[in-house]
Length: 361
Image (spheres, rainbow, N blue to C red):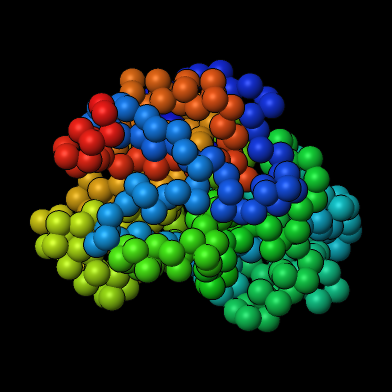
């Protein structure tokens, strides 16, 4: 599920194309999903399998990964007001970290007031610090902070699961193999299909790897009354100096910078100076990338398939014209690609002219 798009791309997605579980549950390796390759210049598509990703890249290209790791962000809590329990066993979802002990959260189907006590367990409580009537997220302050807080969250919580997920898949299935920095409340799903074997093959072929960190916030609030766009969603990120140096060397050598996921695009395009030059940077971003946005850093994108009207489609429209994107998505539906975090993959990358001609287009 995703934040609402500014200029929504609409299409009909059959329910049976929602990936209801990971590839492993379908008898596949995580890296054996399907791959659609889309040339944004021409709109041409090629249908392949994900283990062949390396064939669509060139030595010297740079893949940038997001090291953020998925948190257990869904909890069952009790709510007390003036010492009396007013709600029991209700769901609360982490939405956005503000500090070592302060989070913005979503109370699912429950209204709370400032000062209410939220009981996670005998060891962990929080109180409602502030809220706004026109926003879905409520600010709470935990009784623990830092590592002590994370230890309790991991003990008590589960991954957020949306309505198309029918089974309680474990937290380990909501991780990339390379994620090392806990902080995302929803899976950084574009990199999930990558295995260590694939990463090793890519490196042997001369394809470079670099990393950033961006912790995803909550993107779906369960109620259409909330019109929350990407510019309303602050996410914490860091682009290290080593990655910026790799980007500069890649571009100087004529290689392409390819983001693994929309989170990487958001981080890299936020980490530029006033002239649009990539710089090492950390902080919070609410950058909204859309059809009229001029990409400064990223040349290509590896991503999953996104639902109708999602803000992620706004971002994809910065790479490929909406009319071509919609046509390609129509092909993907016709060829029964699977959608969402456990689904198939889409590489959006312009081919060089000689490569395009050699493929018979």
